[in-house]
Length: 228
Ligand SMILES: [Zn+2]
Image 1 (tube, protein in one colour):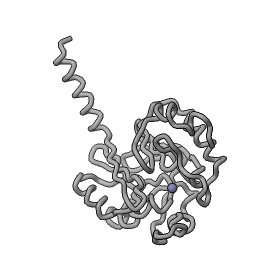
Image 2: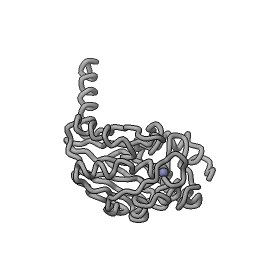
Image 3: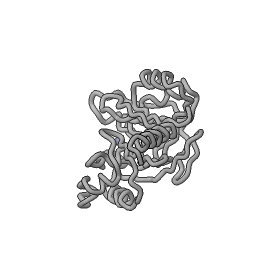
Image 4: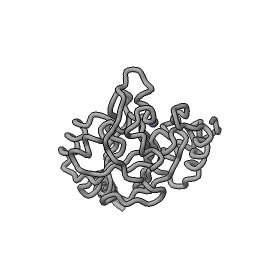
């Protein structure tokens, strides 16, 4: 087969993937939590809008997308700070594990009340339950896997071939388990669950760089050696 033809085919395939689903990452706020904007067919799902509502709004308007909803991997302060403002602007729902409904309004539960220099955070938003398993949010199919350990309602989101792992799994590391409602024992079970997943997902953590599940299985000491 002529080389030119092969290259053309490759390019076509890549572009097709981009049209289907795109993930934009914007680190926000004082502890640089990753806010993700998942784009598909002119629609957007916002994951963990932790801060910088005005900037996120500008980005969403510049992308000219319909915002279908907000989903939280968990409700610590650094993942929820822009929720009220985005709801006010876009009139959408915020989905979170029912175990963390009260985190939104309680500074001690969302941990904003525990750190010097962080304003106590109490949101007005009334959350909708993110159910274990299949959820349809606007035009998006979101599969939720409960993965407590970092917090009581930490949830991993599967959207297409992507896994949004919140503060459960990071690039070559994991989230802390010493905050209120954290549990090392539950984290161990959640990591074992992650190890049992067969697909080589693209992994988008709540902080730091993206990675893949196969890479983490072979380079992340917490998955390799059961350190916790
Ligand atoms: Zn957290």
